[in-house]
Amino acid sequence: MSGQYNSPPPAPVAWRYSGNQLKRWRTKASVSREQLAAASNYSPDTIKAMEQGVRMPTPRVLDVADDMCGAEGLLSSAKEYLQREKFPARAQDFMEREKEAISLWWYETMHVPGLLQTKAYARALSQNHVPPLDEETVEERISARVERQAILNSRKPPVALSFVLYEAVLRAPQVGAEELRHLLEVSRPWNVVVQVLPFERAVAAALMGPLVLLETRDHERFAYAEGQLGSELSADPEAVSRAIERLSMIRAQALSPGESTRFIERMVDQP
Image (cartoon, rainbow, N blue to C red; front, side, top):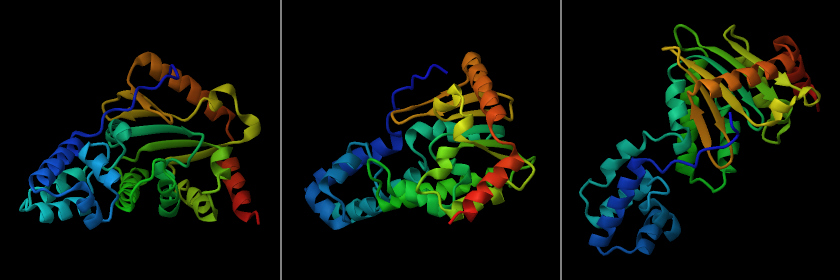
């Protein structure tokens, strides 16, 4: 992959449309942004961001605005459609492909992959998100993450899953004994492999950031990379080939599954 990331995509259409309707009804009813903010326990700037489609209008805001503006359920009805946007806009295409996956290779340098996270770890990450997320969005993200984890053992036929975690992932302050034990537990089924790449074994490709290779039921292959400012999902054969080459090299340098289990077990036993 080129290392260049696409610009973050626009907010979901449902956010923008609902925000536009929120502003129209509020203006029509002569309700100020400050009044709505106070009644729904949000700041006026947050209400503004929702009306502009930058942030998802929350169920609480929609219900409060519906009552204050006399919308007779027209604003509240948007909740059904907004709840479908469970993931950050830039990750939604990848999540859709993940539902169709028959195999997944995942290398991570910064965080435990969402498929392997406990609720406590997921909450710690979400609550430290920049910019901050409201509590409803945090809970929604956690719930969506748990739903995704059905791929580990509920698909028929099972999905072949291979994870390589750079040692820095396991050394992060959010990773405690609970998360480490969870990694040991989820790696027990035959279709899930978890490997650790120690600091001293890192090759140049391993320092270029996280990378995922996904194959669908139709045998389409996608390479996915995510960075701080954007992400890229590509089916381009050249990009997929580079991803395969890099992931194969990383997997070869990582500890074997058995060695990785013992590595994590030692971390759990450390005082």
